[in-house]
Image (cartoon, rainbow, N blue to C red; front, side, top):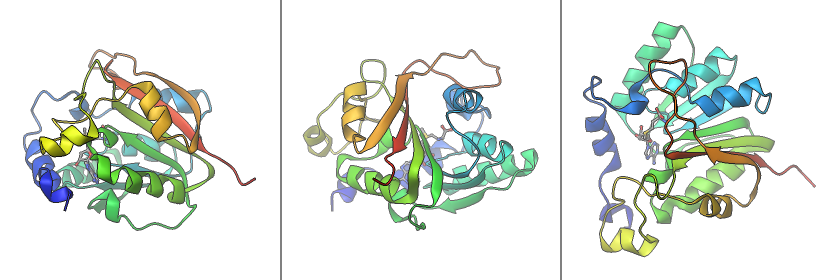
Length: 222
Ligand SMILES: C[S@@+](CC[C@H](N)C(=O)[O-])C[C@H]1O[C@@H](n2cnc3c(N)ncnc32)[C@H](O)[C@@H]1O
C-alpha cells in the first residue's frame, strides 16, 4: 500500500536511462573512486559480489575486472540492457537480474561484498528494513557492505519519513547525515566513512563531492 503512494520507480528509471547522451555524472563508464581505493588499500579483495541498483553497470564491470564473481540487480530494464552492452564491450561476465532488490532471491551468507552506489537514498522509509535484511542475510560473516549516498546539506531532500508520505514523494532522493547512516547500519561494524572525492572527468574513476562513501563489515560469528 505504501509503495503505491509513491512514484512507479521502474517506469521512472526506464525513462531516465532512455537518452544515454544526457549530462548525468554517473553515466560515465568508470568505477567509484572509493571502490578503487578500497581495492588498492586491500580493504576489499576479489570475491562474490552483489551490486544493488547497479544501473548501467560501471561498478559491476570494475568488480568483474578485478576477478570477482558479480551479481547485479536493478529495477530498470533499460539500464540492464545498457549494462549488458558495456559488459560485452569490456569482455566480462556479470549475472544481471532485472527487478527490485526487495524480491531478489539469494543464498544466505553467500556474498563477500554488497555494493550500493546511489540506490539506498531512493529507498522509501518503509522499505529500509527489507534493504537491511537483505544485507544482513546475504553477506557472509565478515563480508563487506559499501554504500555511496546523498550527503544531507550537499544533496538530497531533508524531509522526515512522515513528510515522504504526506507529500507522496521522495523528492528525487533523501539526504542523510553521516550519523543517520551509522545509526541505520549499526548492526554492521563501521570501517570508515568519508565524503567522496571530486574527480574531474574524463578520468579513470568517478567522484562527486555530494556523496558519503561508507565501508562496513558484517560482524563475525561470536
Ligand atoms: C542513481 S542510480 C545509480 C546507478 C549506478 N549504481 C551507478 O552509480 O552508476 C540508482 C539506481 O538504483 C536503481 N533502483 C532504485 N530502486 C531500486 C530497487 N528497489 N531495486 C533495484 N534497483 C533499484 C535504479 O533503477 C537506478 O538504476
